[in-house]
Each structure stands twice: as structure tokens, then as C-alpha cells.
Amino acid sequence: MKIGYKILGLVLIMAGFASCNFLDVVPDERTTDTDTHAGRNNGIDYLYSCYAYLPNPASTPGGLDLLTGDEVITAFEHETFAAFPKGNYSASAPVISYWNTFFQGLRQCYMFMERIDKFPNTTIDEKKDYRAQAKFLIAYYHFLLARAYGPILLIKETPSTDVLAADYPSREPYDECVNWICDLLDEAAKDLPTKRDIKTQYGLATSVMAKAVKAKMRLYAASPLFNGNGMYAEFKDKQGRQLMPATYDPQKWTKAREAIKEAIDLAEAGGHVLYANDAYREGDNSANRFPGVGVVRRMRTLTLDWKGAANPEVLFADTRGEGYYDLQLKSMAKTSADNGANGVSLTWEMLNRFYTKNGLPWDEDPAFKSDNKLAVVNIDAAHAAYGKEGEKTIAFNLNREPRFYAWVGFQGGYFEVLNGDDNAYPIPSYMTERGRVVLNFLKDGNQGRKNRTNNYSPGGYLNKKGTDPNMIMKKSGFTRLVYPWPVIRLADLYLAYAEACVETGDLETAKAYLNRVRERAGIPTVETSWNGVAVLDQAKLRQIVRQERQIELYLENQNFWDMRRWLLAEKAFGKKAQGLNIEATNIDDFARLKEIAFERKFEAPKNYLLPIPSADINRNPKLVNNPGY
Image (cartoon, rainbow, N blue to C red; front, side):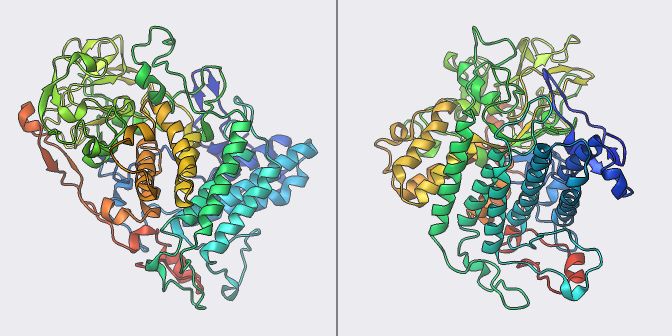
């Protein structure tokens, strides 16, 4: 795999799982046309290079949509991603820009398609599959561009390098972009398999992936940001064409509903189901101490399901996984040797999205809404699985849903990780037993800030989602367990379908699909939870569906986009986060809300779409930038 290509070093090795490293193949600009079809492997390498321009969703330092919403606040504001929540990006300095990268990817795909028939020792069926994968990637690159920029250039053939400026393409109206992308995904799906071999082809395009991306495209197109948004009434190109839809079209929700259901049906027919294994650690299927949270703690990190196949909930996986300094290390509880960054804290806003044990928001639950969230209490026997009994915490951390305990580390609560043989987490100051760190966020506690300027929790909580309880932490470092990152999973489509059903007035079906996710999460059905509390009309179900997405898809690259498409980003992202008082040396002072100093800024309409780089605007006389840039 070296002729004419550069391999970027990362070879994916997982426990019991070896994936192809097609996403790590980057084309060498010196490659000749002869090289690209000199042998069978070169053709496969060329195909893999078409995937190489996709962004890694697991990346944190330069990731656009993972740590950049209002879900978490981190100690890593010096990294590239932090420019986005601060609003410190522009057309002249876009910081993280998809624009040029994705168009390079599109060029690579079209060049590959021109050469498919020249690959030797390649069967007709293989060439058919290669062509379908390239079509999927062309559509997917366009989808990613449309999600970020709205109206885009539609690249329908290999871009010429000697085109005259007068013949440069212009941005096409958003609805035309959506229809073209969806049509191409349908075309690709016809020749793609439903599943691929887990050891050699997992992550390559499938018909399920194509239909799932189409479903997401229709969902975005129907959403408030893109469906008759008044902010874009005057958004036109230089020829006077309206680039964004000027009026609301309810039929877009019907199209979204149909596309999402089509994707769900295909996925389910192919054996995809919600993840349901409650084993918390390897070999922990029996005598499981954490049956209520095991299923939701490990549904993302588990490489293989309980049958030895790929995680059946994941429809679209990115097999590169994260780097050493990404989410797992940044979230890991700090050791006595100061390894583990413990720097990803949930915001108070995100913590309030999680339900109580009754499946209701705290502020609407009759059993708790009158209680003081910040009251200092002792962890009781009923919560001994989630925190050290007798340890002091705040009332807000008790009586919560399983996803809270699976994904949130709180004062006095446990962070589940295996202790290395060098006793990185000393007992009893860190652990009461091997495998569970007792978190203490007071200034001088084992997770406290002390006098650090980095590697601390800004809000007095610690993220656990995406960290595997089987990881072993030593004083010298930790065993990073790499797993395929879920780009789209079945629960995402279930909630998208519930949302489309709400918007089309089918509230009973909406509740049914909501309940699939809620029941797997270990909370009551929506009817049971809200009985006697509120009427489940369209407005209320819209709120519930959105909150369910915010919880279920927490830290899965969705918040950055969902809050924008719902037109909620201006309010949510334009204010500083709140957290507990991490400068406190006692629990009573710790139990106070404080504004976290990190800058947060969001301007409408400017920040709802990303800027096209000024250099491209200046180069192409037909281009206009997005409003505000």
C-alpha cells in the first residue's frame, strides 16, 4: 500500500478487532496516472484516499463540532477548537474550514471514478462497488458542506484546473443542493451492500449509511434554520437568485419523515438494533453490579457487541478513533502522579437536561422541582452503586436517570477505571476498592484545581461518556482503548423520526419512537412520566424530543448542529457557562453556582453558518459569502 501514496501511520488495532486503515491513506501529489492503475492494490489505495479528506469526528484539538457547543466546558481553551465557542473566527481567519478540504476530496473522488475501469485484476462487481462508494462520498462531502455553509457549489464532474474565471461555478439555491445530494445518495445506495466484513471493510460505505445520510439531509432541510428562516430573506447571489428558502414549507417535514423511515426500515432489516448488552466490564455479564447504567455507559465504546459482530446500533462508523490526547485522556480522573487530564466538565445547562429517575426534567418533576438543587446531602445506600455512601454531595446529583450516572462524574461519585499495578489511584485516598475512583473536586481534592492553569474541571463535574471502564490507568499513563466512533446510530434516527412525526402531527408515532430510546435508557415511557404533569400536545412533544436528543446524543457531535438548525444557538451559545465553585475548600462553599470566566459569543445570523474563506471569495467573482461575513 505504498506505491504512489503516503500512509499516515495510524494503524487501527482494537481488542479483538482489526479494521482497515483506509481513512489514513492520503494521496501523494506526485502520483502518476500509470501508478494509479498499475496493480490491484493501487486501485484499492486510490479508493481509500477518497475517504482521507473526511474530518475525524473524534478529534478534540482541531475538532469543529465535538467540544464546541454548550454541553461541556473544558480546561483546554488554548486549543484550536475553542475559537468557535468564543466566536473568534471570520472569513479572513476561518480557523477550522471545511471549504477547501472537502472540495479537494471531491476532486479525488471524481479522478478515481475516471480510472476505475483501468484497474487490473478487479472484477465487474468490485468496480461497481468502487463506483458506488465514490458516489456516496461525493454526496457525503456535499452534505457536510451544506450542513456547514447552507447553499454550496455543486460539483458534478471532475473540476478543471484551467477554467476561466468567467466560467467559475456559483452557489446553488439550498433546496437544489438538498435534492441533488439526496438523489445521488439514492443512486449510490442501489449498488452498495447493506453490511461489510467487520475485519477488512468496516466503515466503508453501505446502503444503510447512504440512506441514513439522506435522512439527516432531509431533517436539516426541514428544520427552522433552513426552512423559511426570515434571517435569510435577502440572502441572494450576484445574479439576484434567492439562495435560502424564503417561505416555510411543511412538506419538507413529510419528505424528512419518509426518508428517515426508509433508513430505519433498511437498517432494521439488515439486523441493526438498539445496543442492549448491560455488561459493564469485560467478562462482567454475570453478577453485574451496574445493570442500570452498563448498557448506556458502554454502548458507544464497545468495539464488538455480545455476539462478536460490530455494535449493532452503529449505522455509520469512523474507524480511525481518537488520538492519545483526545476525549478519553482529557476526561480521565487524575491520578496521584497527575496523569489523567480531568479537564472535560459538563456545564450546568447540560446537567439540567438530564432527567430525574422519573424521566422528567428536574424543574418539572413534582417530586423534586421544589427541592434546592444545591443543598448539601449525604450519598445514601440507594445511591451506593454510583457514589461513596456517606460522602457529601449536592441533592441535584441524586435520584437521576441511568444516563446521568453512566456519563457524569460528580462530587463524591465514582469514576470507573481500572487501577494499574503501580497503584496510580491509591486506596483509600482515591479508591475505596479497585476500579472506582471517588471524585473530589474541592480545590485540594484528588480532582481539585489546586493551582493548575490546565488539567482541571472548570465546572466541578467530569465527563465519563466515551471512556471505557476497562481502561487501565498507571502513573506513567493509560491504556487507550480505541473504538469506532459512531457518526450515525439507530437512536439518532429514532429520535429524528419522532421529531418529524411531531412536526407532521402524528403524535402517537412520535411517542412510540421516543419510548424506544427512553426504555433502553432505563426511564419510564413518555406517557408514564408526563401523566398528570403536562398535556402531550405538539408543542410539548417538540420540547421533549429535543431534550431527548440533547441527552441521548450528548458528546456525539450533534449539539453544535442541532442547536443551530433549531435556531436555539443564539440564546444557548451566546452566554457564559455556569458551574460549581471549584475554588472552595469545603463542601458548603463548593455548592454554589458561579459563572465560568471563559468567553462565549454567538451572533445571529452570522454564526449560524460558517464563513467561506475570503481568499475563495476574492478568487471567484461569482461567490457571495454568508450573511455577517
